[in-house]
Length: 198
Image (cartoon, rainbow, N blue to C red; front, side, top):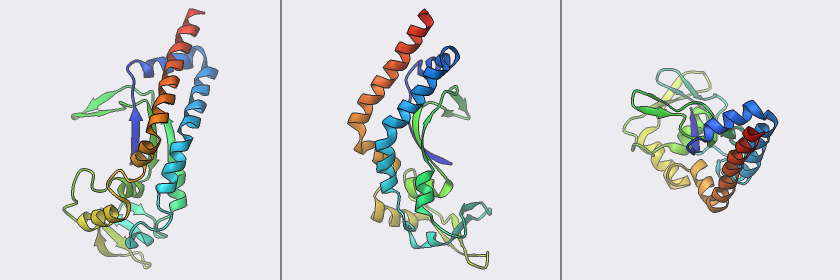
């Protein structure tokens, strides 16, 4: 599971694919340029991601009632969470499945990891009407449920509303980032037109 902010432009995915076919070196340069453009946002988001456990229960492992490991027994690792933040270019086709549209965005910033998603997004779509996680003790057995309204309230009081890191980092750099992204998108379009004309 991942937190993802993304931007899509009509025809952009197709142009990126086309550029990869006719001039792969130029296409790779677009990726490098995008990563460079996103670096200030990445730096900001990494500073927002807590280095200490966001709530006390995250100092130990967490599992869902079905046994899915949300957080290893060693507990929250802020440095690891920061490294799971990556700029991403998605050229996969937009598709719909059971009313959900996927792969809409082209340029995105993704924070991977179940627990990172919880910390960043808890409370965005619900107030958490049930406890969904179990803390795992040092003996490897579940020792109590955490989550739901209390988790959301604690995260909101300490770090604000969702999205606490990814979207917040984007908002802080929005004006400059949007301008640079417009230039990058236009460069993709111009490169494809130039290469096709050769």
